[in-house]
Amino acid sequence: MILLQPTDLPCLPKRIISLVPSQTELLYDLGLETETVGITKFCVHPQSWFKTKQRVGGTKTINLAKVKELIPDLIIANKEENVKEQVEELAQHYPVWLTDVNDLGDAIQMIEDIGALTGKQTEAKNLAISIKESFGALEKHPTQNYKLKTAYLIWQKPYMAVGGDTFVNSMMQHCGFENIFTGKKRYPEISIAQLQAANCQLLLLSSEPYPFKQKHIEELSKQLPGTKIILADGEYFSWYGSRLLKSPGYFKKLIESIG
Image (cartoon, rainbow, N blue to C red):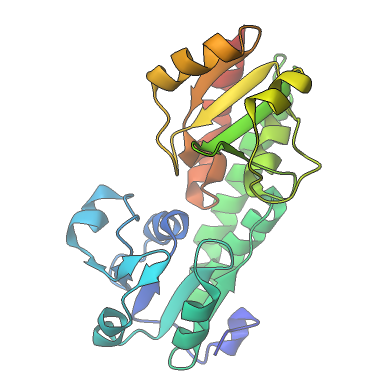
């Protein structure tokens, strides 16, 4: 079944599978080393788990046979990152906690919910407080008032940006950037002409899911000579677990680098 409340789980889980990289890192930081038995091939943090934990496929290509072998008593999935049909299939056999994270508030709630599910309420609450304090300090930073007209690209061929109803958009807002595609939903295909017409001042090229590199900056600079183009670490913009504790520090340096 898909759990609706943390209290729906009859007892503390002893065999957890995480299908979401950012939430896998959260389980690690909550101290759930023994309880976490399965992760995906994209759960690269922490590296020790990536090397030693059983992998159950990709976030959108879950290997149901491997899941069955691990006999989980809790599976943690995400509405956007995992495939609906696969999650529903798993929920017929195992308890599934399905998260839906669209902004910082959702992320804080998710952290506290997973703490409640796993008996790590204190650790989760302390983490949530620290994240709130870090973002509070970022918003008081003197350079956090750019309001630059910004686009954040996640894909090439076709170019795809982030819309206004995404977690990345929420992080852009905390940085003080004005997303020129905030009126669009999810991840719209966009063109160079649209960037030009919107007078894009700052173009952020994410490291994931498409791994933009310096060569892409050089290519785009020829078409957008008036736009500042920067490579952005996608983990700090799109990972909504304990990675959020480090995001404000990264954002502060990024803002300062814009000059």
